[in-house]
Image 1: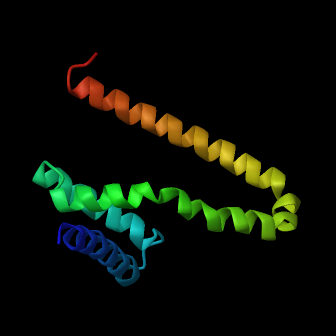
Image 2: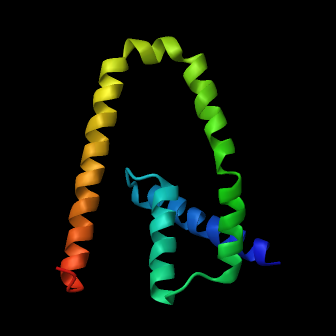
Length: 117
């Protein structure tokens, strides 16, 4: 029963995110909005429900299976990727650097707010 409740919560948040993205015409994917909805809900609640924890741990156990389609895509579309390899590499490097910079800034801001520095 906990697995059903946790999965229902995850799918409900994803559905709400999809609904918001489509109704408001947002350029953000619905599952991303759903994750934000879940984060806000968990932050307000202050803890993770046992059913959601059980479901999350079960999904994480098989996370590596999600990389199989990506690997097949790399093999099937290798020529297309090779043609745009420089642009793809530049995008990956820049997006990673931007993500690291934003994460460092957020962590620094949170540490300052809590009196860590």
